[in-house]
Length: 272
Image (cartoon, rainbow, N blue to C red; front, side, top):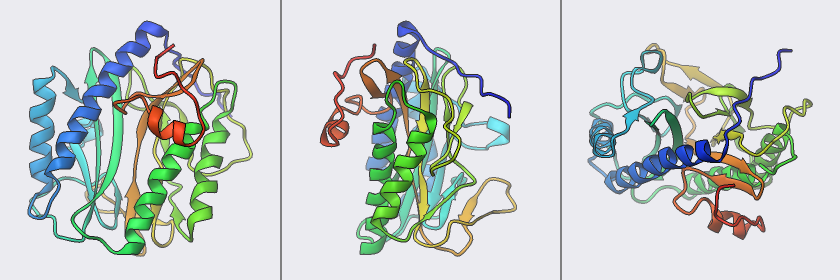
């Protein structure tokens, strides 16, 4: 098996990654506020384009292998890569927003799944589970560890919470001067240890789970991925750097300190 080629960043390059990550975090916050009954995916795409221009950044999604939009908008049973359209969101929907930006050549990428008003309790529990699995995976990004540690942490958290489907066809990835780089980051335990986690390595961690089975289908548009059984799906993501001090979340405003501290994982909040 071919060894992955890893892009290891120095301190100045990590600062560039952080700047791109903050652009992503800021625009995600604006889009989240806009998610409500009556909003459409096209509305969110327009917001993303406007906010990117205001920050002197560009989209890393628009035109990527022909993708026609600036943000992936995946509703209810759509797992990933939903194309924005003019269908208004309704009370009880869940909406996944996957969005990235390029600033000065550095990429940021993050995703969140948002409830539209009140949602069923089991769906809310799935959203919480997916979010907690993301942070469990991030907490496992310790210098000296192995890539396998991340997927193991994600799967352990999900399996402890219920009978959810862990989507295996898609996962996380390295990120830096390109949006998708080596290594591929799986959201389940594997026999192979994978490469060592070393300071300067940046990964996008992105678990995807469903309220049913793990199988997916891709629609005729070549992009939209749905759960095969029609069950609701959640997708969350952060771009994260391994540092000497532990994981630093590039796309979280506080670097991930609050959530990691709650898990007993220390980080000074500074890139090193």
